[in-house]
Length: 360
Image 1 (tube, rainbow, N blue to C red):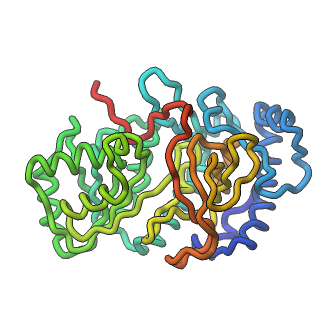
Image 2 (cartoon, rainbow, N blue to C red; image 1 turned 60 degrees about the horizontal axis):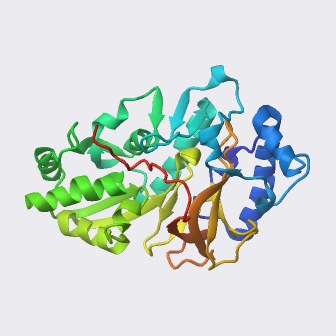
Image 3 (tube, rainbow, N blue to C red; image 1 turned 90 degrees about the horizontal axis):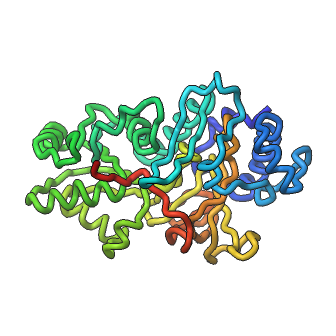
């Protein structure tokens, strides 16, 4: 029997201190490992190769972890194929394999539920007028759902009267933008998109067209790698500054996540730190031997999540370099670990992040 997420229903998404969370994760991750070991033959072989005994209770850092790239090589699922209702795929650059993540009804429901709890803790319980800084066309490949399309559909649940900044050809739709701003003047509005798509296809094109707005109160949530922007010497501060120069008073929240653990996202707080919610955690490991790295030191990021029940994705070793800044003491007041990402580990496979767009 896997850990029951309903037991956390009354707990604030950032309301669990480190000591309590470690005890929770010791139980929950052990149950998830045992469940996937029993139901996924490929995972069982991997666990046995680790020499890990799934019948014992282990601390979070002792759980067997899978390299995230493995989902490009193997089809890993812990439910019968007939129970799979959605197959998520990561976005890959041309010629690269993509990860396939198999979701049943329970896993799909939990992803949506947790994402809602996390985002609502930032924006409140009411749905807000929503401007997607992308094209609506990415939503329609429903059979093999990409992370980009799924992210847009998932975030749309927080909005009403949704509009799209780009047309079907990825061109800036100035009339749509103007109509949205005019209609919701004086209201709190929500904006969402993928980092490099926003920069290249919305912000840069607005600047070229001499188009800008003065929103009175907006919240922008954006996700996706910074590699393309960093190649042009664009950092978070420059990104945020341009957003505000073109859209007005907008609070900007970057967040980090991946298709292999969709739902358990890490949102940036008002102080610019990425936070672990009660549904996820992070460990930093030394590259030379994968031992646990100290706070304030760089290493490979391992992501832990309570959500994956239909596939063994609860402990994943990424190819991202990061460092944990602290725990339970961020000035924003949220409990749990907070951290920063320094980018892709040198020599790692170039991932086609869900913010990648190629002209076809």
